[in-house]
Length: 454
Image 1: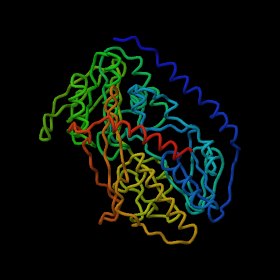
Image 2: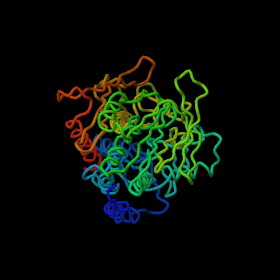
Image 3: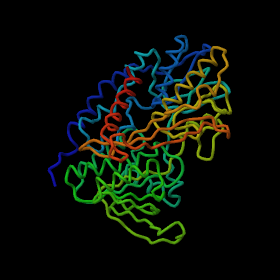
Image 4: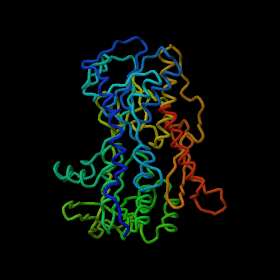
């Protein structure tokens, strides 16, 4: 095995380098901040891809709209492209994924407040936070997801959940989980990495666990770590870009990646690093065989649910907590003064970064129409071709990637619906993956950063 540094000091340095910006933001905070409704006062809860896009687009459309983002974190960190960081691709560090909120807010003319929302009073259009109180004419909810450990592991105690969450970081939400998972990979000895995708239901960026599988295998191969990346899935190979991922696994990592598609994880012993699971022979096997696997690193991603902020708002939600929409719009069915974007919507469109941007731009147009007394056409520009383009890196030397594109349309059921296509490479190889798609992946992410922050 090659000699590896302890959590790549350069990566730690990148994290530390952001601190002065955090201090700058903190120094701008004013206790007991309050605002007044102007008729065009828009509050946005959540500073991810969706929230940042709504803020920028509203100010572009109408400078008289007063926009404030309320976000509990003081530093932006991207989940899209973060698997490339875990996989050790060239020139991808923490500074690639992070950005300060303050400079973007100044550049685009909206306000940024670092705070956590504690109460939403829809009747009085009033928000209570840990850093002051706010009123609004329009409220935009873009709070992202939460993990539903209780649904996936109903017999586990709170202490057990806390232990596994800490030891097997999910890293499907931006922040310290990615740093913890990266540190574990950098510190691991020979042995296995176990990846557990969400057991069921809608979850953020459906290709993410499988791109991560590729990137961690890439890291292990480059570092000459003897072991496997073992995926304990429930989907029997039927997941986003499934054929493309599995083709690349067979071609590039045949001795490293082991995919088990009909399993149920029942226990994780973090002290001895053993996962216990049931493996089923086929879908008619209801008993299965109980097995164990020893691991060096475990990445357990539990079932996703909508952020509790949406429930706090008191709007109609589906069984998983995602906001029920007003037809083809991004407005809540419950309250015409509340809009929802990003992962929190119940439209049948993939919860990806690009989808969040697309939806946020439509929502911004609908909000601008509403505050200016105009009527929106919620079916305008539908179907939208390539509304979502989602890239996934599958190897690092050489860099290759796969992609899926979605067309979004107004489904007769009354919601937006996406239809995806996974194209094969145009380079004549007959494969899904290509170097040109990897180049597009980097260009897409660079473009998104420019769009959000420049």
